[in-house]
Image 1 (tube, one colour):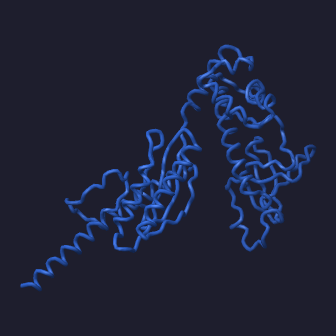
Image 2: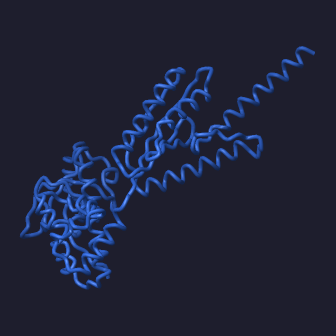
Image 3: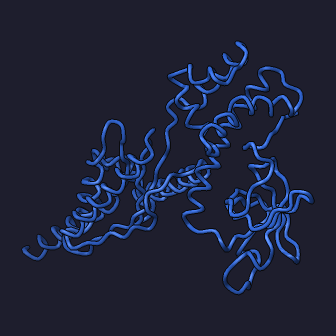
Length: 339
């Protein structure tokens, strides 16, 4: 049976804390949720705290099973009541909470797995390991989830864990798990753009513009551009440095914008560069597979189809071939007229 423990030293969140919750059920008064960082203790989002606007459909605002950040507005530690608000959460709150939760969850995964390998049978044992490691650093640096950054340093400098006062076996297992979980973890970044040009150059202008974006690639940050469905393209990269990856895609978008506007075309950012989750990545893979099948149906079995070098998986050959076919037809018509 899996052993669980809250992510932070304090048993309850404080008022104004932004926490991650999963919706358990919806009632007349509001939604009952589980606070994921606090060992799934129960809280409630009152109906009046769901939205700033008039509520027309509850299902559009909140769903059972959905995970999202909310802010704590009241805590009764004696009775265990926690009131929460969704409408008071800002965009910045969402970003900070999501990042903190991801770090705390990674630390929790490491500690629980260490406990499993050491044969822990009680949650008190996991809590003790937390007190010696994650909560120790939380107290030291006065910051929740800071253990993630400490563990990242421990990948190359094991001596950082000396102050945790772990026995030799526990320390050895802890170091091994930290290295396996945190060593060179890459993030995947994505942006969605619409690129079009209705001038004479048409598809050639789009190809040229997209190539200029790909030229922003480096060895550490390779950029790929894939066609979803004209004029929608997805730009992706994978890197261990989140900020560098985001900036690289931003530069690539600027380059494509500059190039396509020079041809009289346009670029519209449908989704700014962001880190994608495994679920979003799987969804993208399905979209690309579907697009590839549709392109094959359009292209048929033409053996003369050429590959566009340096365009990643971008498939824009169908339009090019159609253009060539039109040119051939015009040439035949001209010859007939001359005869």
